[in-house]
Length: 102
Image 1 (tube, rainbow, N blue to C red):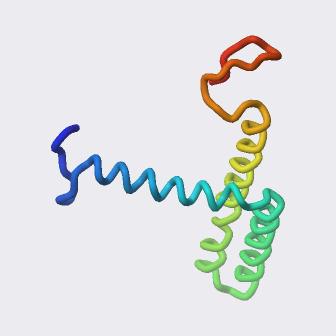
Image 2 (image 1 turned 180 degrees about the vertical axis):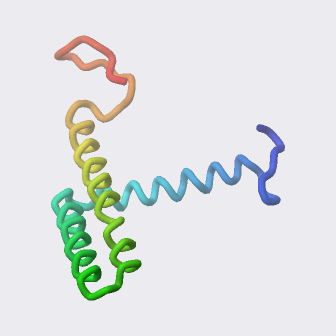
């Protein structure tokens, strides 16, 4: 991929930008409580229902689509908490089980 360009930008520069942005998002999400994300999902569903009742169907659909995203972010945060408790570094041996963590 050396020397390839997309929209006038080097592919490696684009990859670095994507990694930087995703790292920033991941750091912000990891600081959030899973309960906060579940509460946000519940509020999204409630707001969507309310918008639907008052006749704003398009807005209701838009707001209702936030719920699965927030729930998935909550699962991600919980999975990272478990991962940090287990070891936190890829490929390091766990003493208790004698196997390599991947």
